[in-house]
Image (cartoon, rainbow over all chains, first blue to last red):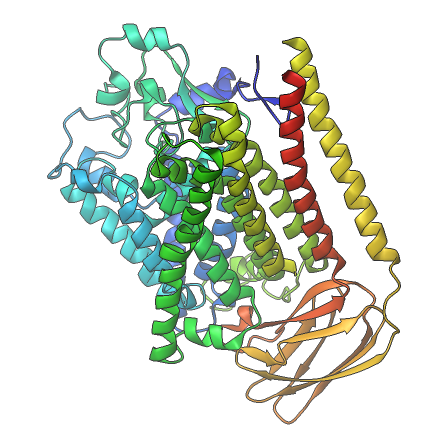
Length: 469
Length: 160
């Protein structure tokens, strides 16, 4: 019997977009996504220049700040991740220089042997922990890079340089897979996405002895993310570079539309690293809201480093809250879940890890609601900065004089409330299923689910209170 | 098998209907709830990089609100979400606003004059009570939470 989300949407439903000839040809062309990357690179050059010459001025009239922290962030949270999975990775310009160096070419396939040292990434770090820590550390400077152009320049320049250096030393896209601070949360939330890259017919892959999607051929490179596209089951680590579409001689790769969140039920590579990513994202959302959209001046002084003592207090509390307190609260409810279920044979670690995936929809909703609160009041600055990207008095599109205009901010509370409720629903829908996966019997699953449901309800109410209460 | 499928779908639809009806009732009650007697309220708000004092002001629906804005350092603005009204103040030159707080909920007031690097984050809250928006969504969340447990039990019993 079909398992239906909310009793309405069959979880096995798929629509293969690459059935459309235009899209299939696009995905098989070597021009794509290279053209998108080059276009993006051009935008990032402007961002970096505007960051460098923007100096210490207020960021709301700076091209780099507005494009990165308003437009890019909102696109990422509203459209790219929830709908198209890791579509940003597809067009991300950060690793283009190391790709170029390793391959010796930008466009053509030069051979299977890549340049650079090509060292293997340390086994102990083949997880999300480095990304977790780097992303958390990056947020320590949120009071600088979201408002000061030079700080954005340093941050982005640093990431591009790091991507290049890691590409010199380690094999393929080790940087994207294990280091990039932006990659981790995209991977986590892409499990909710409404699109996926998957193989079509497993029999074709089984009979295809040379796995060209992994090793590459004259049409495409072997998976730069070092994955095995012939048996993809979830989105988390697929950077959607589309090389597997090019290297598969049987046209057996598909780009599907699907119901949101189905990856959450795939019990593969679930681990504490991904669980902590979910906790950290929730913690950061709360801290960001308090410091950016909250009315408390002393918190803003802490975050912007008005005094060293305040800044260190912010870092300490932020780290303790995101890394320890949120997981500790969730651990307590996981313990209650085990106790309620009466299933002694199920480990607490399994309960803790499995149920942490219920935080993926809720976390995504929390971030979307947060981002609505950023873009509606501040989005109109974009009209100004696209006309005058370097603050040199240009008026390229005639929009330089458009005044700051908050849009629909009267409805902000309704929008944020509705988003939180919607994603809470998704968390519950997948939570009940995760409970059935976690516990051996239906009765245990039902009982063990109740504490987690209470946690999710309390977390949603907490964010509701914070955002609109 | 088929009867199970129908039962589950019907159960979900019933729950959704119940949530919608309950939410509508709660919201209607909030809307028709007679507010506390309307009064005249006066607030003197001081703006200083990058916060307001007081940073949260609470009034009742229907109150006539008068705001005097003072700046303690540079030129600051005051834009009130939802009401779309604004004023500004230079040091030594105050701004003022008058309005009827006829929209319940929490609204952000924000600096409308670029005043420094943290300018986009310089905000305060006006809470027009009762905050029906928050209570509406909180009620929906609670109803969904409780409803989901009831639904799970009901589906199980029907199947059994």
